[in-house]
Length: 158
Image (cartoon, rainbow, N blue to C red; front, side):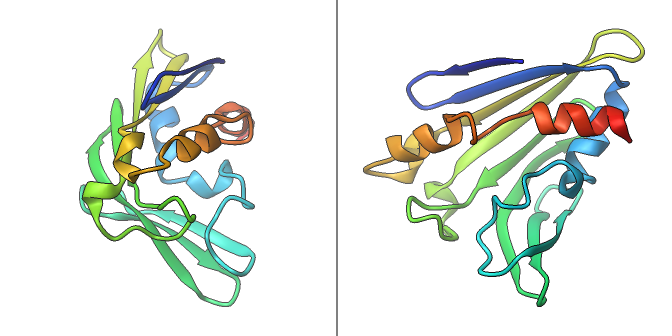
């Protein structure tokens, strides 16, 4: 896995030994199988995550008691090569309803043969979070922030 951080972008990449179509679908539609269940905004345990596979769809966290958190809007959905979504979470780790103040996560999937895929994630425009945005960059850029290893391990295990 490679990592990188510049001023307003955090980058991660990993190569997985699955076809590009499988990597894309697992990252999106099976997001709840690899996402850290402790990384959500609900005040209760996470029951499931739902990725609505279309531009304008949402990424939804659902709690065990039925509470929902729609923390992201799907900005691009181009199977099997690219998906982008808003990071509609403010510096207080609450929902940000103004998309002009949300950063963006872009993920590209590049086939490297029939059963190998390069997955590259860029969390862009972190400065849109306003004064103090560096704290968001530092959080998502930390080892327990964007980490593609759980995805890489889960996609080959299923």
